[in-house]
Length: 286
Image (cartoon, rainbow, N blue to C red; front, side):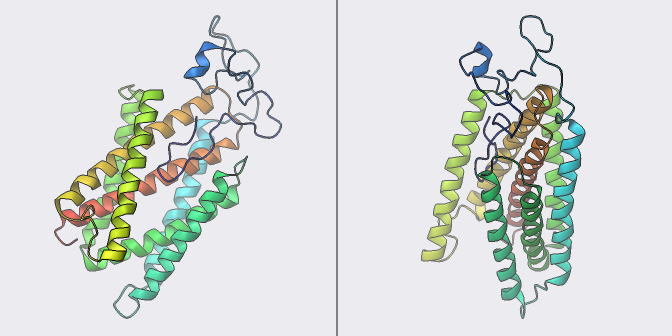
């Protein structure tokens, strides 16, 4: 399965990962289940007829603990660098331009690192941690500016909102209220593509025409698109949970836990930024 991340598509768990022969989908026509199960041709999956494992489990297979620990490292890096940026990069009027410049530069570096990782055949922890560090700097600058010039409570609201969305989606997924299949994935990816194209168009109109462009990020339309952005982020979380579940169930290599952490971190950053924008508009001072 390809990535559910809203920024770009990264490789999924079903590719060859250097020495893990057979984990990649080598015979896509072999089983009918391959149409919906990205690991259906994996020799470590269970036999659908007998329910017994087709091959012994590997000692280096990915576990939930691996995903949790890697995600804690990436999110911890984001939080630490965001905190440092908030404290060390002043956003007072005399230094606002400089701080914004550093924040935008950090966001561009984070994007480049994320793109490089997306084209790698295997997870590179240094790239993922680097992405988290620079993304944290960007979030720290933006959050400090919003807290200073809008409302100090907006950042806390955005953090709590992100946590609530994560918990709600995880609970709904575990209860099987959300069923991730090809139709769900296709709908979410198509909706995300349309959403991002509208945001890019809004940005271009804003840059060349001034003001808020098409108005998709302020007022009533801003609230509507903020809610849509949060809902899309929740859908991406469900897709990420599905990838993690499939990877653990069907014996993904342990290093794939880094990719799972990478995707979850990007999705949570997406939700936080949408929450920050939404609560900023609702505060009445967009």
